[in-house]
Image 1 (tube, one colour):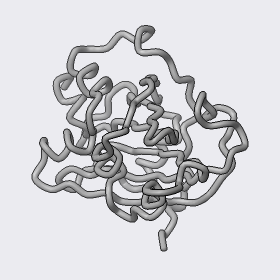
Image 2: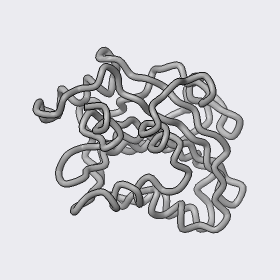
Image 3: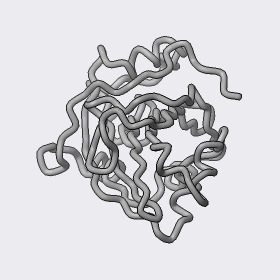
Image 4: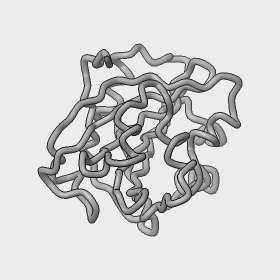
Length: 193
């Protein structure tokens, strides 16, 4: 049973944009537009990787998160986690798993615990990533409020804004949506410091 963090669900109340409408450095583009498993990329950059589940429960999909594969009001499992590299949170991830997608082999996605979602879905040969959208998160965003609440290490210099991406994945014809926000200590920002 998951213990929910006090701020769960954190949610991501931002305006997502197409990749073409955003100007980014080469390093940031490399991380944000990385098409393979982010989990695998993070593991390759650290000694110790772990996932901390902030919360997971069924909600109705809100209009701002609805997309071509997931309808407004559809019942989805909302899963929010932090991805840690060497005990520093690098990524906040929010996944929407429609209950209608959790059939057959995909039933396991509802019971991941602290196993990374990326580790499971990128091992499926039918996986397709439909699109990547980007967004910036200012110091008033819910993600930054979460960082304050978990006593995020102050030694990490905070960039002017945080960047995130959102993708729709389809496995065996079943959609799931994953949004990832790169936190201040993320490798993506290190070249800017």
